[in-house]
Image (tube, rainbow, N blue to C red):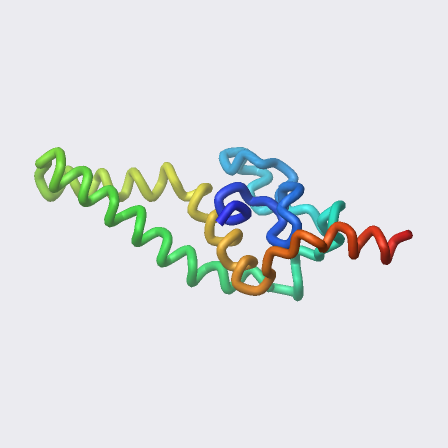
Length: 126
């Protein structure tokens, strides 16, 4: 969960996978480091690896939309047109976060946390 929420390396959780950790730096939203400098994990495991994150993005977007609906319609009691605008606004405002979160979830499906990975990487390098 830690690496999903922070965008850190899923194997060692020591450094950010992204060149800029702020998802709202829109020109660098997709810019990732090539490898983790601590454990050596290659983030782009294969060409087009993160295309699968689109499926995760759909589910995460639905979760954000449902949350916006519940807050707007059920808690605040707004009309349906206003609720629709709230949902669209929420998805637009949080799109950079949804993109990064989806990539983090996707890579964590395939790479598991290994606290000994830094020692293994240092042994191979040294």
